[in-house]
Length: 437
Image (cartoon, rainbow, N blue to C red):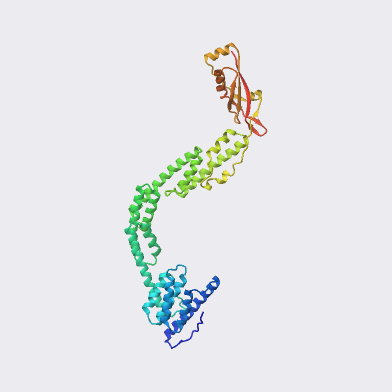
């Protein structure tokens, strides 16, 4: 990097104003080159063509060879134009071009370079400690002109969006520039009308959540838009009614222990464009967790008591996995692995001692004739579950019709639960049913 000695003149004397600009240029370029040198060293990279151009332009400037410096800087500017990763270099080149043009008293060209600088970075500011008032004033003019050009472009693009029916794009564009550009407020009533019209279309299509958002934006832009206000209230009512209906149907599914369908439906609603409001989704999640917790508790209790029938039905109700873990992954993890206990054999006397409800066989006249001739004994192989309910495994001892009549009767018997030291158990017992004359 060449040295920078801040002397009143390199080849000829300048007036005091040009001398001040030379001093400013000296301080500025020295700072830039130090930063560039440090960055290149830190990256372990050799100086590239652009960095070299900046260094050479410094020497040319302090030799008062402004035209040569401009030619070199324009070449660097051409190299930087397609680049998107060297914004700082772009700004530095354009600022040096402006200062070189000022050295030639080419104020118009200097302003053009400064406008291009502000096109790259609208918020760039010159340090008043480094630059004389003339440069700062010219920069302010260039910044104002560039800002007005940008605003005019925003106004033109916003108008095109409105004419094309794209209120969202027009709003996004104008809101980001509203504080910097005059005249954008005047477009807000048109945007409000467009949001209102698209909201009505969404309402008629049954897309109530989208319609509500459109009416909300219309009212934000034009708070006194009466039609938008009326439709906003109407849409809110529609959403409330639909939400209540959806929630009621969903709760019916939970009451019927349709956990799989309920979980899928919840995920679909949550990701839908017309999703229920967050508070409703929270209530649905709470309801699901409460019902699931009860089922998990029933499973663990049934496992402890050996209630095989209940345990067979519970896994059929549960989803293999929950699409939304917050619905109850932590609750499912509390389901204890359960090894089914076998039914224990008991004596007929023990079983009959716990008999609570006995139903006699219904005999046709033909079966009654058989029983009148001699007593008939039907041996019924029976399984009594943990709740005392009966399943008949087999019935033998008489004719098929008689055996079936006895089987049907015994299946309606009820027993007090048969217990061991671990609680209720299912039991198997052979019960002889005697039919006397």
